Length: 157
Figure (cartoon, rainbow, N blue to C red):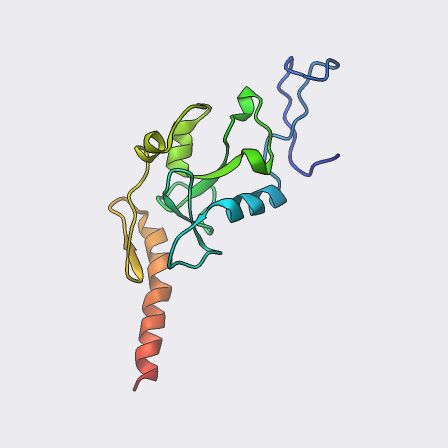
């Protein structure tokens, strides 16, 4: 079966016995990422297409994949690729970028250990607060809310 994922040679670690190269896909394909997102915990009271909790319980936003802010996340191999993990849905989880960098290729980390490397984000009503959130991301998320509130108040006149 062919995969649309990029391939990476790891040399010498082949399970097939021939050629000496590992031809497993290194990255998650589009369908695996979609199912991985769907498997992540939904944030109560938030739009499920946009907001999820990662494996450590951190809130992440679907718009911010592969960036470095507090709402950003990456797709992570639960069993690290370097230790034989496959790029499949069963081995995929979303992790806040900062947490994923800490996890690296570690295997036996529990939720509490992962949470220790998280950004703190608290939702209050329609807004959220984080002492370390990127100002640009904050504005991207805040402005639509403010415009919606202003538009609603104009309709009430």
